[in-house]
Image (cartoon, rainbow, N blue to C red; front, side, top):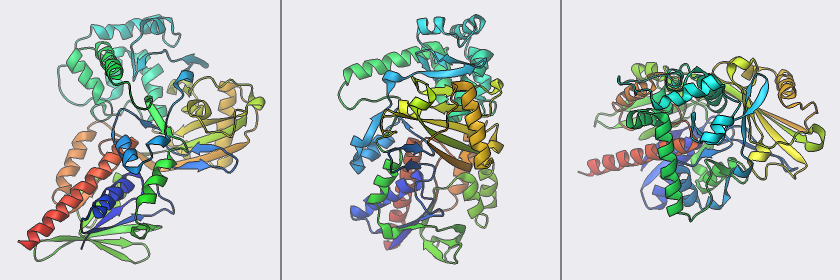
Amino acid sequence: MKKIAIIGGGITGLSAAYATQRAIDEGQDIDYVLLEKDSRLGGKIYTKRTSDGFIAEGGPDSFVSTKPWIFELAKKLNCEGRIIPSNDGLKKTYILVGNKLRTLPDGVMMVVPTKIMPFITTNLFSWPGKLRMVMDYFIPKKKEAGDETLSSFVARRLGKECLHRLADPLVAGVYSSDPETMSLQATFPILLDMEQKYGSLLKGTITSMRSRAKARRESPSGPKRTLHMSFKGGMQDLIDELVETLDKDKILVGADVQKVDEVRDEDGSTTYRVHLADGKIVEADAVIFASLAHETASLVTDIDKDLVNILQEIPQISAATVSLAYRKSDVGHDFKGFGFLIPLGEGYKIKGCTWSSTKWSGRVPNDDYAIIRVFVGGARKQELTFLPDDEMKAVVKSEIKNIMGIDAEPVNTWIFRWPNSMPQYTLGHLDCVNKIDERVATHPGMFLAGASYRGVGIPDCINSGTRAAESALAYLTEAVDTAKV
């Protein structure tokens, strides 16, 4: 019986295992093992649920609803009913400028304003800044092909004020990235497409919004969808549902993979030997690396030095989240909105804050409490990720006091650190990924998947893991058929 080894038990690896498990359930003669070095499954998806009714997200608190793969998976798992929309009736995001929280005007899509009156009346941008953004309508599209940083693109099309007051805090707070190094092709290809197709981001975004509105009118049925969605019990719901469907005998936690060997047999077939820290060896006919690029590089040093070098070109950064629960009566804040983002030039250590109990229903025991989630570290301030707990709490509480006026002690605090766990899609990233694909193709039965390559979001990782499993299954099926000839 042919066997697949899946290295990594985050959402990518679990999706690969689920696709393989379904193939087995449908009668395919195949085996698999999932190897996760930590004591828990789920990777960066981790929800803290307390006995007194608080729900705090350690990693991502939501997924983008414009990509279908998470809905497809939830349908197969029969847990669609646990998906919830954000509370968009309370939606309001602030940007801290001049030590004042200024409302992000309604109708901003990515970095492009689409509604006239909110844009005219906002105090987020100066009048010269607004006029410069409107000039996007007249600026000709870039003629030369090739990648470009997000910073260069936004400054070129919408001006430096838009870059510093909107694009910079958005990508730093949401993506933990630096727009000065981000690859536009790899992160926001839709902006490039709009420029090339419409000659203007304003024209392209307005046209796109009208098309989506028409589609909603023509297909009004189905559950309400907001741009960002989550699960009733937090994103951990998805992990729990996935794990429940898998064969527990095929999942090994605390399995620290040290290296992988490739063995070319005399008959031309290829097998893999996965070495664990406890001395055990797992033999497999195919291997799926559902690990981050730098982790995969450390495992294949004896297989392909060129592949190792290319994998190491993808940077990883560190970040942390700090969730604090308060009694509303202690703080005197209305929490009307989803939170705020902070541009680098404002001089704060934190990057932003989500008012979780406003954005999502069911995150607190009752309406007497509120949870906020603060973002620390990221591409420009990685060192803050590793502050001791007491220092981390002191920094967060001090800056929340300055910004929101909260001077009360939280009733609960949760700190989650993610060292070297966030891939950065820097300039030329897709060229790098293409080179990785070329090297991997020279190793039959080897497949790479996950956030390091073609999408960091949860739906992207689900799709990546599923496709890797499907490719591995097709490869092994072909190998079996060839052997029979």
